[in-house]
Length: 428
Image (cartoon, rainbow, N blue to C red; front, side):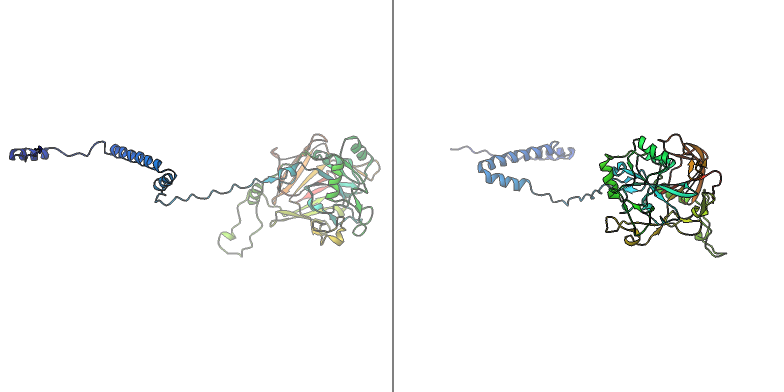
C-alpha cells in the first residue's frame, strides 16, 4: 500500500498568527530581480544558440532574423555638413583675385609704350597692366613702363625705346624688359645687368600697318612673350611688388570718405538726406601736370560707382585703349579687330615729385630715381600726402603717409606718375 502525503490544514491559532505577521512586515521586491532577468536572458540565449548550432546554416539565418530585427525607432537625421569653401588666391601685383597661387610666380613683362601725339594713341592692352609708370621721355612727351603678368589681350603695344630711369623702376619686378632699342646708357645697362632683354624682334613682335604707323606700330602678344620667356629660360619670377589693401579694407576706406553733397531737396527729412559722417576728405578731380607741354598733362575723375579714376588729357580728350581679348587673329590689328576703344580707369594714382633736368643734348631727360621726395596717393575717393623712397636700383619704391606709415593700394591697376619738382604740379 503506497503512502500518501497529507497536507494538514492550519489550525485557527496559526491563521491568526500568520495574518498578524503579514500586517507587521512590508513586502519588498527581490533585490536582485534585474540580475535574475539578465541571468535568465543569458541562459535562454545560450540554449537558443545550442539549438541553432544543431540546426546548422539554417539556424544561423534564423538567429540573425530573430536577434537582429531593426529597432522600432525613427533614425535621427544628421544635418548635412557644409562643403568647405575653396581657397582664394590674390595677385601680388594687382591685389585682385587669381585662379591659383602659381600665377604669382609667372614671368612679368615690363613693356615700354609710347604716348606721343604722333600716332600711338589709343594704345592696346594697356588696361591689363598691373602697374604703369609715366614720366617724360623726351621733349616733354611722356612714355609708359607698363608691368604685365599673365595678360589676356592678344595684342600689346605699341612698343618704343627704353630710358635708364624706366629700367630703375622696372628692375624690382624681376621682369623681362620689352623695348625697341633705347638711350645708349639704358641699352648698355640692360646688356650688362643680366636682364631678360627683349628688344625689337621679328620673332616675338610684328608691325601693324593698319592701326598705327611707324615707328609707333611695333606690337607683341602674350603668346609671343611666353615664347620668348621659354626660349630665354625665364620660367619663374620673384617680384618685389607694392603692398595692397584687401577688398574689404578698400571698402572700409571708401566708407570713411566724405561723399558728395546730398541730392535731397531743401527741407527734406530722413536719414537718406543726411550727410554721412567722414574721416577722410573726398577728392573728385585730380590734375597732374608734367610741365610746359600741356598736351601730356592729365586729369583723373573719381568714379564712385566703380571706385576707379577715369583718365583724360588736359584737353578733355579721354585716354582710350583697345583690348583684344576677343580677337580671333593671333596678330590682330586693334582698330580693325578689337572693337571700340574704352577709357582707361586705374584704381589708384600715385604721384612722385622728382628732381628732373634736360640731358646734355637738350632733348632727353634725366630723372631722379634713387632717393626720396614728396608723394601724393589718390585712392578710394580720397587723397593721402606723404613721401616716396627708393634706396637702390634693385629695391622697390616705398610710399608712406605723413606719419611714416606704409601706404597700401586698393586692388586693381596702379598708375605712378613721376613729375618734376620744378615745372610740374599736382592739383586737387
